[in-house]
Length: 294
Image (tube, rainbow, N blue to C red):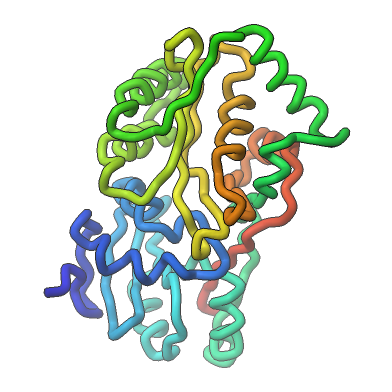
């Protein structure tokens, strides 16, 4: 029995929907970070996500800043359904290049305007680049890694799983004390990701100094396993170089079958954009949004 209501009915996302929703997402070619079950479920409260399905066409409805939007992770669909969705939604978001290639002409004929959504582009990095940090362009990053190893010679790494999530939660709680507005951060989503880690197909590591937990990262395979999307990465600020080291160590832990690491978007934050650019992205996962012409 389906846990997702048939269109036009919608229901809030639940863990029980994972079995039905995940197959719609796992093989998508573009690697959009939001298009994983964990990426949707863990932010269901922030965006008030609700799901519906019409034949094989999955629709997720959400709200942000008082405006309603819908997203369609995969497959082609008739513009009649899109027209119905626009009657109750303000815009259509997270359109991938692959989806646009299949549906772009029909969108234009139906009178929709496609807009570039640069603030939501995901940053793509070469796994081998981040695992080696070789060459002049990564000189400063490698210095941070070397500095961490020199300052904390007794360090170790463990997989992030049910046996180490308590240590990761302690790091998260230490991290959030430095945030002026915790409610505007991903603290709640990160905490739930750790508490429900056994329910998701995620991989990660915890970094220790003298057996004391100082940093962790958690990622999920996307794009048929050719890419991983890093959903969360946290470190104690009192251990210099911990962020750079967990980034480096996690990239080294991934198999050669993973070609790219997706470190998600900058949301238009200039400081975050500059920080992400210092790791020398090899490309971006482009995203678009669509509005109805007035």
